[in-house]
Image 1 (cartoon, rainbow, N blue to C red):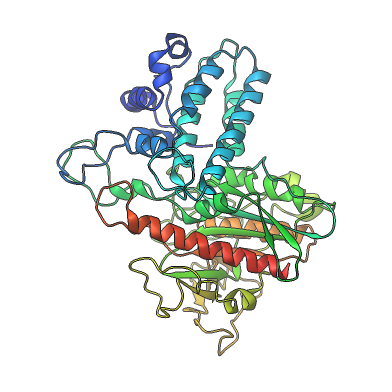
Image 2: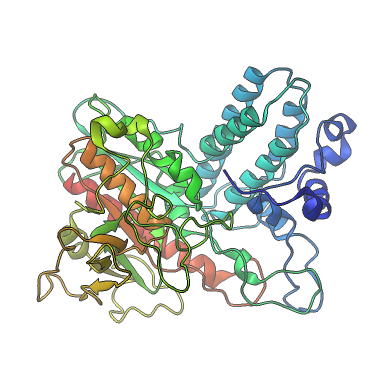
Length: 500
């Protein structure tokens, strides 16, 4: 659950965010009466009131909050007012639960429909491929749930469950609908929310924030573009691709968000998945195919400004007997007696078809965006087998060793990569020790615990945060990078479907 700041510190911005983000509440007395504008928002929801400096005159603020520009730019400005209206007229917990699950699913479907529209009939002035309207509309809605004053007794735990139900539904986690039986390949793909939203370049306008708030996530855009799509593989088999997005926060992972979404489709049955891929954003102009995933996590803060494993005195904490620094798995996905999931392995490994993904030349059909630095100009981005990782060879010492770094860009590499040492403790996988690595670790651990021999692993995309101006919410270069990454990401997922 997101950490909450004191109500006093948030009172002004809470009231501002509520009125500006929820015009229905401001205009309809019945709706306004059922919202407590003094109730504290989460750290993420608090950003709803943040404003950028004006690009032409950085000494003045923009006329609308960044969140409003994203929500209205996606054509979602009517969503939260309608949710607020219906919520404020709800008389019991069951009705509220049904409402938030239904409306969360509707928000996800609307975002998917927009992303797959190719620009036809969309509302708002942001490009159809933009993933950010979904993120900010979701936050606007969870803020309403957090400040709702129901007509019945609602415990803190029940409110948290309502927020979680809406959150998961609006991520497509209840929307996965794989066909059963033979003759079809079933593929699940994850993406992520925008992150690192604080900081960046600032202007002189008082009360404005740094331009990192503009960030989107190409992995989230890829998930929206792929969800519910079909692809005819090279063998002629039809592949069905289902997608969902993950939060950039540790507590939701610890509560089983990923396992609860993918796990049911890794169990035996007619809808058992044939490939499960996690995707996130990294940097540069390259897609990294991560080989080794680390259990260690928590060095970097999430979107909720919480990190479980901060360095102490400039040195990393040790992993041994330290569940703050180690991913743990909820009992319902194995339990300590059956699978010892409270002490899972320090490393997991990918089973993606690395050679096929690299040799497929997936970037040849994708236009290169401005500023692309991959040396081979015949493709949009490179694809590299990313085999580096960092370990504690001695688990009782803070000494770390990084291996296979930098990994060669040619395939096969001239020298076989060195696997993690027997008995070592992980510090970071190829994808680091942030939540991208954690999604990869949990997904491949789940594959192993279910005894599956399927393609599973992690794709790190290039960095999308390329803008032409300091403070404009969007521009052509930013959009070109997103379209290019989504296009080549789709091609890579299709290669996995070809081999599944």
